[in-house]
Length: 216
Image (cartoon, rainbow, N blue to C red; front, top):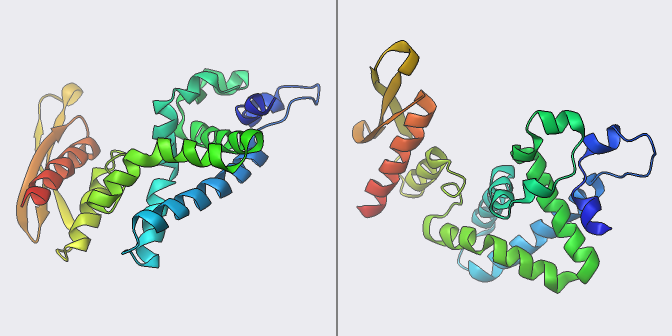
């Protein structure tokens, strides 16, 4: 059926010699187009004050592979994906690229089964929290836990220039090393955080900086 088709990854087709199994790539193509249209329609109605460039940027943030992967995780889509044995062994059910594609194919399945209104309702329900966040911050980046991007976009909106990240300290022995990273805006330290890697520490520092700047 449509649902099975939408959840079948190409790795499963490659391992099936019968020729009777089809992957979800054509449905993903359709779902991507439907999603883009519905999100554009929702943004058009909810953000009449935004110009075309702002709406395009918001839509790109909302329909990014990272956003779709996170939404797919929320509905446990990975549990239902039909994978080949090789992809199963390498953790395919947790790969954002795979479950994001299945999310788009699922949108196509809902449309093909019930038409436009059910799929619009599904997309709105799944994306409303993201759209609400975008209305507050101008980006969906913090939903995807990309706090560095969220901070950069907020600072650019405020005309404050780009943030800088500086390694402030390395803590602990080599096998349990932790890193402390400081984020600066206009040369002024705004926030500092620790993490298991420089990347994690920078994201945590950006998250704190967002709170500081938003509260100012």
